[in-house]
Image (cartoon, helix red, strand yellow):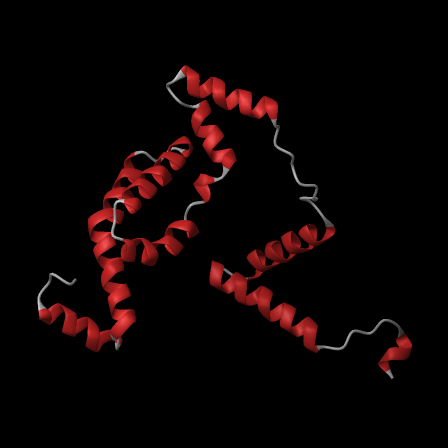
Length: 172
């Protein structure tokens, strides 16, 4: 926005009440989006398979490094937030789907050398059953996601505020 007309800048100043460092950061982010991110976004739309994810992250990092230092500083937080495709599992998956036989061999060798250790936690517990039951009851009672959410939250609030009687002697 630094190269745009003063009218656009005044509009942003008035509309959001931004000044100084905040306005400068907004200008940097908007410029980055216009010059870099939107192009990457459309590339992601075209190449949207799971194994393409790490390639998009690498492209984004490569482009980010070519930006001025102040742009890198402003954008790094947002790039890190969306970089979950940079996890080793995704990178190995991408390498296994590569056209290059060397990449595929490397990925398999890495997996054989150090297999993934799955953390030990249960995916199906009594609390999971309870939540599934609550959602099922809410779906039978109301229509729509917001209504279901409200139904579940209202019931939870009701249970928190109402006394819980463990035996007959608690009622008196």
